[in-house]
Each structure stands twice: as C-alpha cells, then as structure tokens.
Length: 157
Length: 321
Image 1 (cartoon, rainbow over the protein chains, first blue to last red):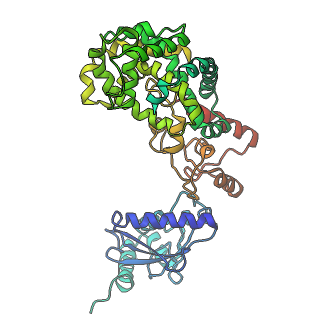
Image 2: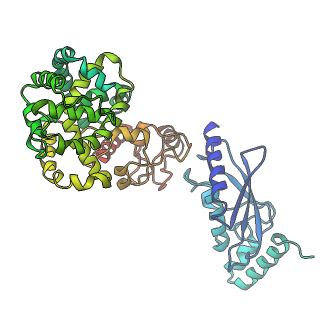
Image 3: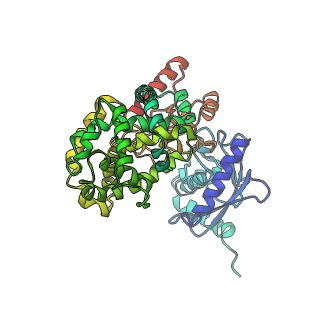
C-alpha cells in the first residue's frame, strides 16, 4: 500500500518532469485518487491510427508495482488485440510478462508499439484479426482508419 | 584557538605523547580492518564513531608520516633537525621551548591564519629564522588551507584534548604542508602550482612507499588511489562515487518501492544482470514469481547457496574497484 503510493508519487513527479520529452504520451493522475490515471496517446505515424488521440484508463492495484496496472482503451479502436466493446488490451506485459521495473509511462510506450505492430494471432477483436490473418491488410487499414476518424479525432464542424 | 593552546601546553604535550602512540596503534588496527572487512555492522559502527575516531586517525597519520618528511624539503633544511622519527617526545618539547625563546616568530604579528603561525614557529624554532624567507611564503599559503581544515575538525573537539593535539599539529605542520602541496596539485591551484612543481614530483614516490608499507589509506588521504571505494563518501553520496560508475547504475532509491537504499541494499546484487532493488522488494518478488524485474530471469532459488554466492558477489564487486 505504502510502497505503491510512494512509487506512484515518484512516477507522477517523473511524468511532470518528462512532459516535454515525450510528446506522444500525456499521463494524467486523477485529482483525488492516485491509483486512477488516464493517458492520452497519439496514434503512431504510418499506421491507420495516425492523427488520432486515444484515451487510456489506468487502474493501479495496491500491489503495484508487483502487479501490473489494468489498462483499457476508453476510445474506440479497431485493433486485433483490443476488445472493441470494453477496450481491454491483450498485451503480455500487462499480464504474465509484467515486470516491476515497468512504469505507467513505459506501459504507454508499449501500447503505442502494439498499435503499430498488431498481433493477429491472439486476437481480442476477431474481425480485425481475421482481416489481417486472411491477408486483407488494405481492408484492415481502411476499417481502422475509419474508426480512428470517427472516434479518435476531434469532430470537424 | 590553536595558537593559544600551543603556548601553554608544554607539559601536557609531553605527558600525552605515550597516549598518542597507543592511539596510533589502535588507528593502525582499525585501518587494516577497514581494508579487509566490508561487513555492514562495522560500517555502521564506523559511521557512529566517525566523528571521534576520524580525528584520532588524523593525529596518528600526521605523526606517522613525519619520518617521510625527513627525506625531502630542500627549501627548508631546518626541519630535518627538529623532526626525528625516534624521539618525538623530546622533539615536541624542544621545538616548543624554542618557540618560546625565538623572538623572530611571535605569532601575534602574523594574524593571517592560525596554521601558518604554527608552521612558521616550527621552522624557525629549530634553527633560527634563516629559512623563513624561503619557506614562509609557501608556509603562509598552504598553512592557510591547513587552518581551514583544522578548524573544521576542532570545532567538535572537547577542550581537554586540544593541548596535545595542538602540539602534534605543530610538529606535523611540515608534513601537512606537503599534504597540501599535493592537494593543491590535485586542485590545480594556480597560485601554488609554480612553486610546487619543482619539489612535488620527487616527494611523491617516497611518501607513497611509506604509506604503503605501514598502514591502510585513510578515506580522505590524498595519496589514496582515486579508484578505491570511499566508505565515508559512499554513505553520503552514493551517486557521486567514481568507483561505482565502473560497475553501472547505482540507484539511490529502490526502483520498485522508491525507498532509499541502505548500505545492505546497495551492496545487494541478487541478479547477474545488475538490477538492484531493496531486500524487502526482493523478498516480495521471490514470494511472488521470483523473477528479476530487470531481465525477467528466475532468481536463484537455493536459499543457502544463493545467499553465500550473493555475498561473495557483492564483496568481490566492492573490492574490484
């Protein structure tokens, strides 16, 4: 409990310091609860998610950092490893490959990397995974781009 | 402060010299211990008695290095007469009395620094004031530094030890001066470099040999190789330590729980990958999945074997610097 608080507080200070350094990630701690965080990440370039801003919700367990934080997308995203309805993320480092050396910031980086390199063989979004597995990259990209434009971009007037 | 005690302390100086030798022996033993053993309890003890024991070491070392000063110092030949390695007690008295008698060196006139008073009286007391013209220039400057260091140390002194310590300091002033020559060389003090350059190269080998034969290095000894680990500094500035930079990143705080690493933790290297963490987090991880946070490899599970190998590894790591 105390350890997780101290650790999160340190990460908070780190985030404040590095805000300029990593323009793709914006980590914000909940005002009243240090165990709740939200993050805004920019879709990586040269992917269908480029230009979109995706919101992530972090729920940090009290055993953190021995236990991984729970992360899910709040923004709809068409991605093989993200549940389309719940936003749950299938990422090994959030499950069994978690290491206490990881931070919330590094989790965000890992999620950005996952967006750029989907793993269609362990899909949470079967439609998306099937498109990629059948080799229809163009179909996948157009779907993902459409959802990015619908959900992750500011509405145009 | 130092000067006052010098003038009225002739008898205590003679009486306290045997005690001084005993202290010197004790200091030698602790110095050897310091090099051989690196267990945590002793370090904690060291930090407890640091204030007191450190001072004693200072005195002991100053007196001990005196013989080395015989072989050098072309610009101040009088010192040779005074400082005799065999008879320190007599010397202290003799130089002291001659301090009283010599008219040329009344320290009241020179108020620039206390230590320069001490060193100047020491020179002229033995053989008159013939050498003061050559030596007083360096004595004045390096003595200035000396007074700075000595007042730092004496601030915490209890007054009863002041007297004989002051005498010892006066005797050792010449030695300390050469210490400061080296210090200045390290610091590249532009004022002193021109006059230190001619004598310091020939001094250095003599003194280093001397030091090597007789005792371990003090942590703040200027002859001590730079690469050696410095326990005192290690306590306070673990990040600034030069030796540790060779090994790798040594965090101040545990990266897992963000608590400060104490000495046990910082010498604790559970995984060959070099990832450090505190013992509490290590225990929690071992109870959980037992994998190193840095490389995800399993920690060694054998309790007995792992602790001994861990200890050996940490020790070898420390002695490697």
